[in-house]
Image 1: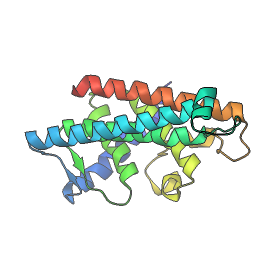
Image 2: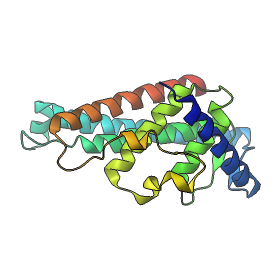
Image 3: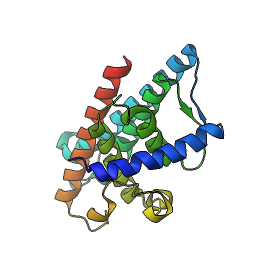
Image 4: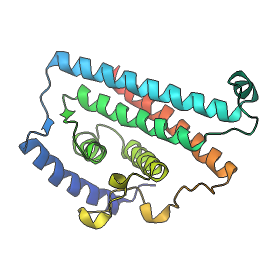
Length: 206
């Protein structure tokens, strides 16, 4: 369910940050038609490759025959690592969508934050895509951050205009002690979300 107050805070935050980045030429907003096609295709390919990786990791973790084929122990699982490529599937999907709209973000530090802000600024607040898709992206980003323990992802909201991560305060951290059933549930959710997200983006672009 959408937290409309929190979403409005994100919109204000995105307006401030993206306006600044455009002014500083950190974001291009007028790609040529050939560039749009080139970058959209490139990022869609990366999204699909990421999804394939996530799907393979999930199958290896859940299917006996896959484990036997790869000569792995019967109890082998890598559920937590399904989450990372699932997120990157969505991350690249967003960049494909932005390219489709003629937008390109410079590859600098903070690219994940810029991507989320750009998604709000260029695609969500004007109803080009549904807010629910944005919420799915934010949740996926949060889960990947918790898994990888990347400090950039975990900067506190007080440094921003609002709370950047999807209900960070309500979600527990992933740890090595997480029960296998919980890890499998998170992995399955992440993979399903990524598949649906990519499918929706492809409907728009293709």
